[in-house]
Image (tube, rainbow, N blue to C red; front, side, top):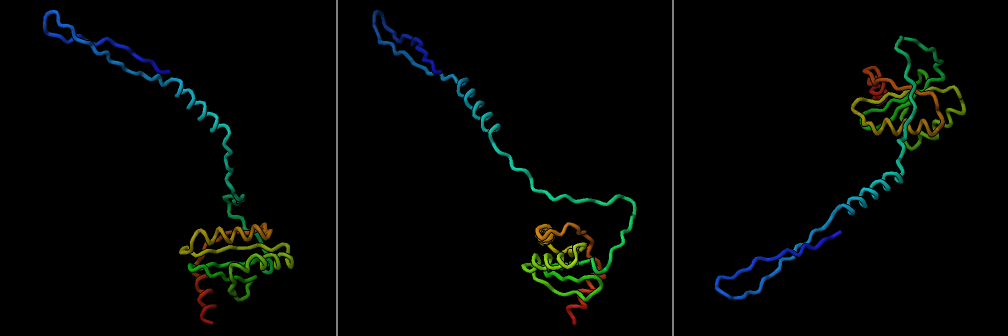
Length: 168
């Protein structure tokens, strides 16, 4: 609410009996309390009615601390190696790695999953590669319905295998 203060002015006059007109000064004071109340109500309303987005996450099962070894048939192991420029090489078992384009991965996973439902994918990404490459490949694995996959470090032996394939 606003209030108007009609304060009296001082008389200015020096002489005897001279009458001078006095000017009254008007000051305005605005009460901010109702505005603050309205702002707090609006803030509360928007906070309570806002829809919060839930983060999209992927569940990852981490193995226990002890060194357990799992036996996997070579015919069931699909190894994907991603080098620093984003080129993807795959091999099943101990076969020679072959190059594959990212756009063909989804259909590739579906076809091989039909042939072997126990297929396990091992993903190895070069340390110089981008995080985006790894996430995109993991998304393709997930979209294809391949539920068993693992991440492994890209070693020097993997680098030698890729160099051998490039040289051939």
